[in-house]
Length: 244
Image (cartoon, rainbow, N blue to C red):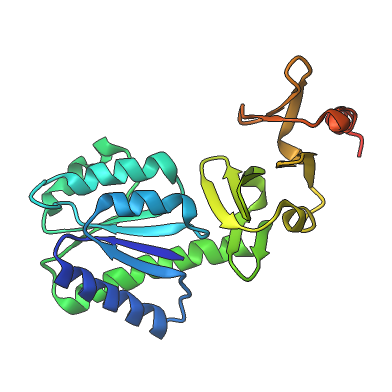
């Protein structure tokens, strides 16, 4: 998992980070990193580069803005519909109105609680995440591991992969964009359900629904459109007819 902490009191942020490390170590919970910051933009800009679904612990009041954490949660949801959001706050009175922000928060943790109670609540959140995503790991997941990246997502959420820049790829799912280091060639070799429709694109065959000849574009179930190489037009048409 990837763990983000938004807290403008850096002593509290470091204490919470240390608590997370202790919980993960004592419960054998694997994580990629723990990022503790007072800057919401730092979290937002990292979301496309996370290779595992994150869990976010957000203070609600940031730099004297009483509802800043709720607004940050809305921003997060623009890029990540799967991550778990937990509010950590002294403003527990905001719990009843949080639904108005439509961010699907898991829970609120009151900073005023004693250490042991807070520790148990944070532990419960991390174990909840682990139970959800351990189950996912046993299902039909796409997994890529190389020297520079580890990516795991449910295969049925994948729309396509594309070349983003030198030695970097973008994985586009139904609701996420994940950037990572790798090549289309190594990704293509991992699952026969992936089809190289263009020099720079690798598509999930199960998401193909139509071909637009006028613009030589492949239409996916999500409505996304990606280019098709001229030499592969015939193969695309065969796949759409159910021929392999």
